[in-house]
Length: 352
Ligand SMILES: [Zn+2]
Image 1 (cartoon, rainbow, N blue to C red):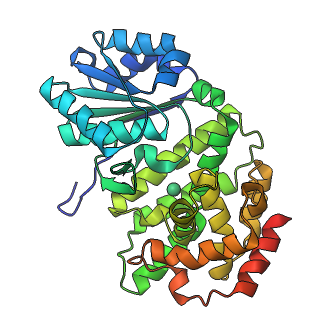
Image 2 (cartoon, rainbow, N blue to C red):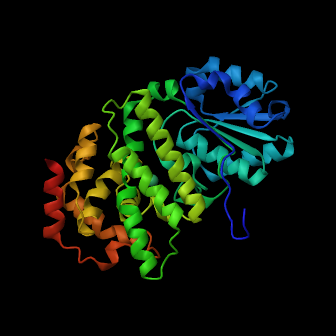
């Protein structure tokens, strides 16, 4: 370690079949004595009931740890959980679930300075190992709050296979979004709007390549699940190393944010919105969009905006509003004359 090091990495990252049943042994290997510490398991009601055996087993292994259920990733719930952890001197927070659960558990563990163990049940986006939590404030706007990355990440590929395939597709979309994100990051750095970190840049590019050029066609195979888990975790670590979400978030994410903010009725997962944005962003960047289109076709991601109820007018409006969602972020959109004809052309390309 040298004096300029400013990030930390998880102690443990295990990806394998059926590993949730060995959570205690795995963690004891990396952190002897951890199962003797007071712990709490954070999940949601549905998962607690669906996977009651595994939840009970983990709780038993951690000295009959209590279960805390969340229904939304909001600031109030995360704060209440942090208060409980601090007041009851709990040392270990185990997040068992998808984005909502993990963002709440991660933030609460960060505030209360507890060890955070991440057990994802889906692979829907790269927030699982990122140094940020996205939480709703007073039922309205979502805020991205900085926090500590997990101390340990255990991915049970058997569990991920049981999750809806649409969740995995969302994870693929978030990963290929790095194709345009790193390019925008370099543009921002050139314009003096961001500082480029070589390692974070390389890691994020490799995450994208590992899925874009993956030779495994079956999305449900162990091989693909492993590749996607690694890509999502490494994406989170690229953000930790860069100290910002830049390596994983460019104009394709601005498009996704614009849908979220201006068209909340459009039902589309975060990762799919990013994949749709990635096609437009690649065109604005003057780059080949075929790689994106092909990988989406290969894994069944539907890029047609019409599928999600996005008319041509809405699609154009979303792109027009995209730069304004994060006005402080320089991207290709700052140098692009967005015109209706061009956006219509992109829309038509995505319908095929
Ligand atoms: Zn994302």
